[in-house]
Length: 129
Image (tube, rainbow, N blue to C red; front, side, top):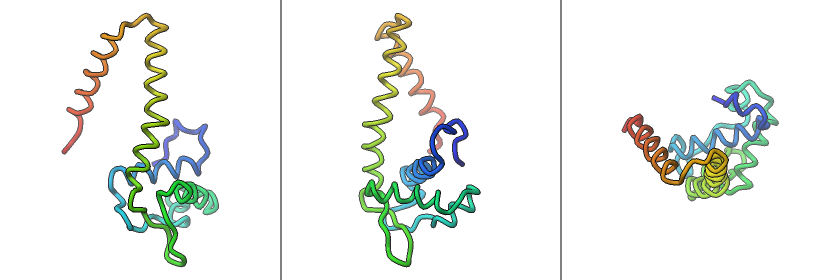
């Protein structure tokens, strides 16, 4: 479940990102309890303290909240918070890297747009609704 291509990222960051993705895909809804640090530790064969660190990242971002003695729960705006953050940080960075590489390869803007449109259709065609 954790991405082995992300081995450079600390495991607790990978745990946080995995939970964010689960929330985006609505596997966890607003006010729903998420996995405990011990469940995550068992699922991913990691130390519970590492799992707790991943959970705490999400608490700090306002994605999860703690109920004393009950666990961690998804906040009301969790999905929106994640989407905005990923768009601002990840997506813009990826687009910048794409445009920069296209510039280095002397690829015209029209060709980039055409390729993006083709990939978009491929992705949409591969989705199961």
